[in-house]
Length: 192
Image (tube, rainbow, N blue to C red; front, side, top):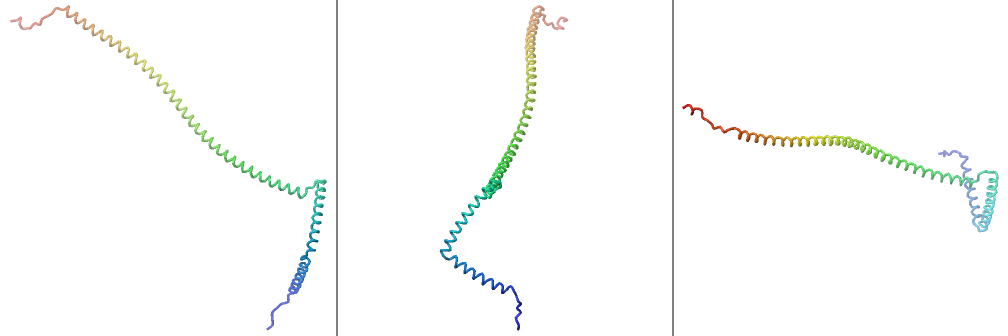
């Protein structure tokens, strides 16, 4: 039987690239695995870093002259933006807390106002009751005065009554003294 393998042009390319990659990796490993290369790389990286620092200073000086923002300016602005956002969040939280406390205070004020309204109603009722009581007290005083007058008149009348009684008794005594004593006479005795 024949094999059903189709021709793939990329298969040979893949094999070739794998071998090439392995050889390049071995070569790089050989170059980097010695101390001279490490020293040389260190000297070059130090020089490169000095060059980059010089370039950065020149860019900042040029940017300052042209009034163009630099990376550090943008970093500072972003830090300030973050700090501002944090402060705004804190302020917003404080505003919410103040709003909540303001609402609580409003509710307490409303309850105090309601209580004061009730106190005013009770005070008005007490005032009307007080005026009624004052009227009743004045009426009671007037009635008491009238009762005392009636008592005084009754006392005078009782004095007059006693005087009349004593006068009656005197009159009766006088009448008895002035009138002859009559003896009772039996009707039928004289006729016999």
